[in-house]
Amino acid sequence: MLHSACRRGTLAQVRQILSHELVDTNSRGEYGWTPVMIAAEGGRRKLVDLLVKRGGDLSLTDDDGYTVLHVVSIKGHLKVVRYVLSKKVVGVNTTGHCERTAVMAAARFGHRKVFDLLVKNGSDLTTVDSDGNNILHIACIGGNVEIVKHILSNVNVDINSRGLNGKTPLMFAINFGHVQVFELLVSKGCILPIVEENGKNILHMACVKGNVDMVRHILNKSIVSVDGEDSMGKTPVMLAVESGHTDVFQLLVSKQCDIHKTCHDGNNILHTSCSRCHVDIVKHIVTGHLINIDSCGQNRMTPVMFAAKNGQRDIFDLLVNNGCDMSQKDKDGNTVLHMACIGGSKYIVERILSKEPVDVNSRGQSQSTPAMMAAACGHKDVFDLLVNRGADLTLVDGRGFGVHHLACMGGHLPVVEHIQNIIGVPDSDVL
Image 1: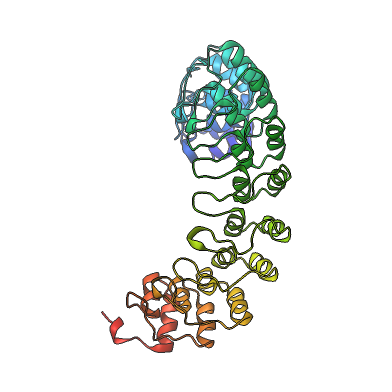
Image 2: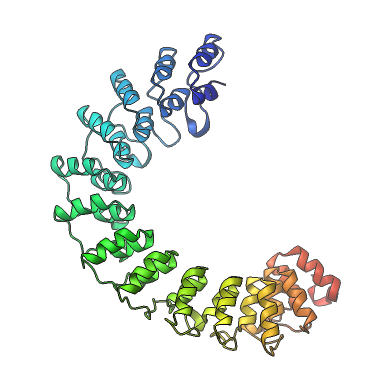
């Protein structure tokens, strides 16, 4: 009751509950929060004061190690921050989750007035958290340009220092789309053509986040190559496609990026957009004839194989209607029918079977038939469709396993029982 009343902020109700002296003022609720933490998070200074006068302990921490000072600094409640500091119970430099201080919390969420108050009260701006981030990294995540200015002017911090995953302050600003902070750091001489530990530069990061204005900003400055590769061989346009950012993709194409490159796994942007189910990007590539619709990617899979394997009806139809070749096989011998049986879309399987003569018992990886793959993946409707089209349920794969074995190995009880009703339980399957 006390936690709930503090969350609603009803001062009279809290006072009434406390008057009965039946409730522990410092009792723990969700996340280990005390009533005073809940009241503080809501910015209710009078309620916090009441709880403290009734024994509320400001020095307690929650399950993440946060104090009430962290809580109010995250929320930016200036009056409550001032109140907590006045009690001199919580150390201004006490660390909480990830060894972050209250001033880091204020910087992370861009609360300038709270940040200034904490600094005035002796916050240590040289602290580094457990991720390796310093106050400049944290402030660049928060995006308050005035806080960043203060740090650059008053703290001895390397503007190109490395934080989590080798990211610089500029990279954090880009990750969170803070153009003003980006401009400030550039004006202060930060190094621009620099990469983090996975080989991504600032353009890669902007493309992953999908901030088209930031991408345009970087491209206009000609800071880095539009086709630069990260450690996986992925270019900015590949990362934009992978993340499904159509507007960024179109911007990069307009800037004459190389759309034909493949990353280290052999996939180009059409394979990636099909495997990630980004219909708009696939449509743009296919209708614009930007890339060979039958190009081979990872394991020699074609775009239509990726679509079938993912059960993506819209992308499958788009590729088929634009004349893709459905007769190709991947490096393991799988056809588009095998892939569709893994994906489990009855619609796609029906389209494949009706499109042209197809061997319903063709052999793919490990000599598996389409019916075996449907059984192994638990797709009963697809399995039944194949049976109706002549699938031979007596066949075994290269390991000697039949459809019943594979359904059992997959743990698909309804399919196992269904197969048993059709063919019975072979003696070879009884342990």
